[in-house]
Image: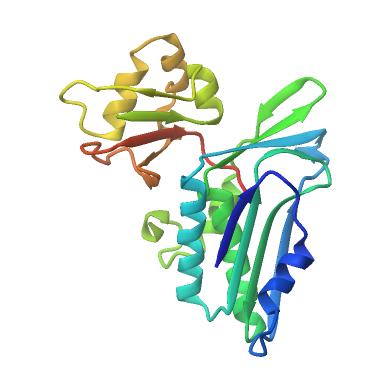
Length: 159
Length: 83
C-alpha cells in the first residue's frame, strides 16, 4: 500500500507502472484520476485550494485502503491526494488498484473514491474572480459512500 | 487538551488551534461544542449549527456523544469535501 499526500502534481501512468513492475500475477489495473473542473455549480472558477488535516488525512486514507484490502483480492493499492492550490485542469487525486481480475480492481477503486469524498479530512475552497468560497458537501456523495456498508445508509457501521 | 479547527470553522474562530482546559462537567464532544459556543461571538458563529460540525478525537472520527476524557487532540471541521 502506498498513501501519499503532496502539493505537486503526479504522473498517473508512472504511478500505475510501479504496481505492475516485475509482477506476473496482476491481470487488471484500475487508475482513477480526479481533475479540477473549470466550474463549480455552473460558475467558472480559476482554481481550488485544498486544506487538509495533516496526520489524520494519511491515517484515514490508510484505514480505508486496509478495509478495501480485506474486502477484495488486491495485489496493490496506491492513493495520492494533493493539497494546496490546484489550477483548473490539474489532477487532484489518484487511486490505483491492481488485482488478478478486473472486478475486484474496479470495485475497490470506486469504494476508495466514495470514502475519500466523504471521510478523508480535506476541504476544497473555490477560487474565482470575486474571492473564495468553501465547497459544500454533497448528499449524493454521502449516499455513494453509504451503499458500501451492509446496512446501506448507516455509516456508523463502517467506523 | 489541544483543539484544532479546519476550513470555515478555523476562519470563523480566527485561529487554527489552541490549548484549552474545559471545566468539570464537560464530558462529551457535544458538551465541548456548547461550551466553546459561549466563549465569544466568533465561537458562537462557528458553532451556531453544531449538528453540521464534524469532530475527531486523536485523529479518528467521532460523534457528538463521544467522551472527551483522555483526549490529547480534538478537531472540529465542516463536512469533508476531498477526492
